[in-house]
Image 1 (spheres, helix red, strand yellow):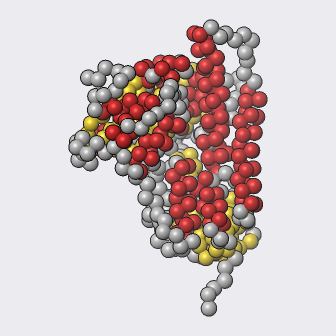
Image 2 (cartoon, one colour; image 1 turned 60 degrees about the vertical axis):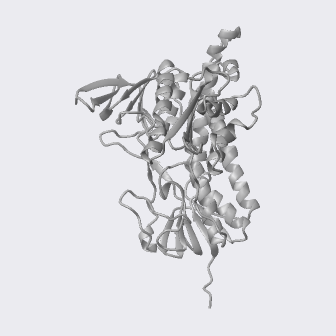
Image 3 (spheres, helix red, strand yellow; image 1 turned 120 degrees about the vertical axis):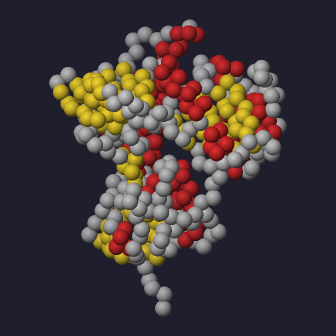
Length: 467
């Protein structure tokens, strides 16, 4: 006799991965519930991707208002209402999270509110109630990593969550500890809003994992805008005093130490998987010493009917990766032939200019044994970029020399993230640089720069001198 369960699928976590999994499972006819202890939408909608992009847009508007004088448009009497800015940001969050709740109702997904904790491999306790499920998907996400010697108070020493609440007045001096995506996005926000910002990074380069040429151009643009950048530098401790936060910085190469004073300090050294209170060991689920719950290409853990997706399963910790994995897990449970088989997962830093990439870097391609050719097209040669007053950066295309097969695309420039979709599709379809070069792109657009980079691979770009 088949055992009866309350649900066919129980998803723990309603972030991007979790809500995608729950909705797809329900679409496929499975009785589905989703547990959330904080807010529907998870970190991404509430304290990450969405509110950060709202603040980036606001900061960019301030920057553009100053640039407008170059073409004869001047503003007078402009001011920044911090309360209204924070309220506008929260309004966007509320609208989107409400939309997810509405989708749950429309798809008949049962929302359970509270801390989820395993009782056994088919039973989960939520608050004071227990629920059983034939299949369980763990989508508990991640949280900011902490730094020894520096205590976050979410007022003057903040993590990525606290940094979303812009203080009034804007801090005069700000330190961002960590030169990754989060550190630079907040550095860009506060720099545009008026702070004197410095970014420090322990490693020799910022944005680890991105192409070195692209990172060099990105860093140059950030520094041109007034953001100070120091690599191979670490923060040992921070002490709050009357005149600000005194931070001891150390040069990793020489060991030399200095103390600098800031009005706000952001700790953005990465994120760690979140499993607190979950008790996965009661279900027999394996957890690594770094806190991850490993999953195979079908998102199954070592317990076949328990799945793990998103940040809690593996790096990279990206919402779009979690979304895809959520769909895979739901479809596998429904008996569909699904697995996580992405050729490449895109990455983006949403500053201005943006830094976006998909596929292999030039160094990675060479390490894998490819003989490569590259094509570069600068936005300084793009008519559309000129009209946007955004000509920093370039499109770099990496291809295998003998086959012309596309291996990676790296973009520093305006709306780079929006141009990345074409590159991702080309990689998934095993397209060549010639395929892209032969595709007619609308004129005048930024997307033409992808075409010209493909032509530059074969020294045939029209709007640059091919050397």
